[in-house]
Amino acid sequence: MISSTRWPAETVWEQVFPLLPDFTVEVLPEIDSSNSELMRRARASQHEATLLVAERQTAGRGRMGRVWQSQPGDSLTFSLSLSLTPKDWSGLSLAVGLSLAESLHPDVGLKWPNDLWFQDRKLGGILVEAASMGGRSQVVVGVGLNIRARPADGLNTAPAALTELLPDLTAPACLARLSLPLVQTLLAFEREGFAPLQNRFESRDVLKGRRVHTSDGLLGAALGVSASGALRLQTDTGLQEIHSAEVSVRPFPVEDKFR
Image (cartoon, rainbow, N blue to C red; front, side, top):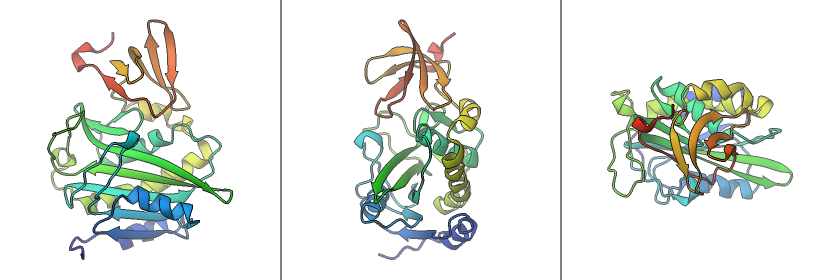
């Protein structure tokens, strides 16, 4: 199958190459999962910095094994693989989400730890995976964004679409907006960690000030994130910090906002 979509692969490569001299851009009409493919390459000791765009995914994955549906034109799905050696990996998915949100629109919010939201609906998600081979750490950052409206069937959270905010936006144009800032954010994270981004994240935090419940049974008020990217939760037994990205967090309706 040959893609008829015009992707800005050369433009993205020209922007990123000065930062990552081994950088390549690939666009595939169909694949099981862009994250799975780049993880396979990482485990095979292929360490080149790679941006892999999948027009359609047959087995796309989200966090905690959730399925991510991907159809050509309706969504943008891509993964970015590069070698990173930060002192602390904490907060990496938050840094990625912040970069994406700031590149897209002022009204895009962030839901800890890896979702982009608009009006309490999910615009997109992030899946961060890492492989260590031969003393090197390769991180794969997967991104899935709804470009056009999609059915809500079987979804825990109703979907939103970026065309609600940017009516003329296409998947290729979205990729062009996101790629360079995302690479810059990842390289800055490697040097400085999440702490310098804490305040900017909180300005888009859709959970802060709201009552939430977690998949492991906690109930309380979200008080923002720590300098390491942990979710700060005020419960009846005191302040707790949630570090595990395997914990799912859901807000109560907005009218229940904590005061």
